[in-house]
Length: 142
Length: 142
DNA sequence: TATCATATGATATTCATTACCATCACGCGA
DNA sequence: TCGCGTGATGGTAATGAATATCATATGATA
Image (cartoon, rainbow over all chains, first blue to last red; front, side):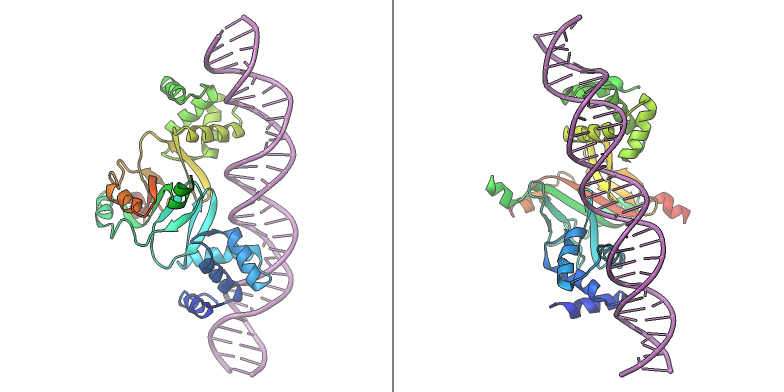
C-alpha cells in the first residue's frame, strides 16, 4: 500500500479511526478510475485485504463521504464514489459511460451565479455540473 | 383532464399512441411539484384513472423520457421525473430536499464551455447544473 | 369495422442498499 | 507496554426500487 501513510494522515485529520479496511478502500479509490460503484470498490479492496465485508464497505464509504474525504453521486440509479481531493466537474460520455473529472471548476469562482441566486434568498453551498456528450475515443471508434 | 388535448398532441408529435394511462401520467406530472418519483406519479395518476399498474407507470415514464417529453435524473438513488418543456437547471435545498427549476439556463448558450471542451475532443450534447444550498424558507425557519 | 402491432397489468425476480446484533480491535491512559 | 472502552466490523435478513416475462386488452390504420 504505497499511500498508506498519506491516507492514515487523512483519516486522523478527519478524526476517524485508522483501520486496514479504511486504508484499503481509500487505496482502491485511488487506484482505479475516477469514480467507481460500491461493488467495484469492494471487489478491489477485498482482494487487497483478504476478507472485507460488503456491509463494511457501504458504511465506510458513507463515513468518508460524511467527513468530506470522498465525493458521492448517483449515476444511473447506483451510487458512485471518488476521492474528493479538490472540486471538479464531470464530463460524461453517453456512449461508453466513462466519467472524467475536469481539471478546474468550469464555473470559476461562480461569483455571478451565486450572487444572482442569493438575491432570491437561496444560498449556494456547492454545485455539480455534469456535461454529457461523446468522448474523443468513442467518436474515433465510430 | 384539462390538458388532455394538449398532451394528446404532444404524444402524437412523438409518434406515440394516445392512451388514457399516458394522458393520466402526463397530467400527474403537470399537476404536482416540479419533479416527482415514479411512486408519487403512480399514486397520483392511478387515483385519476382508477386502475393503473405500477409496471405501466415505469414503462410509460421510460418511453416518455426516450421521446424527450420528460426529463429524468437520479436524486438520492431514486429516479425523479418532470415535464421537459424547456431546458433548465436545478436549485436543490439540502435541508428540505425541494427541487426547483431555474427560469433560464444558468450557463447561457454555454459557448465558451463547449468550445473549450471541443478542443479536447469531447462534444457536449447537453449538461446538468445542480446548485445545492439552503432555500429561503429553510433559512427563515431556523 | 377488422386487423394487427403495440400497450397494459400482474406476478415473480433481480439488485442495490439498509437494519440488526454479536464480535473484534484501534487508540487512549496508566 | 498493557488494558480497557468506545467505536468498527462482518454476516444474515429485510427493504424497496426497478426489470423480465407473458397473457390479455386496445389504439390506429386500412
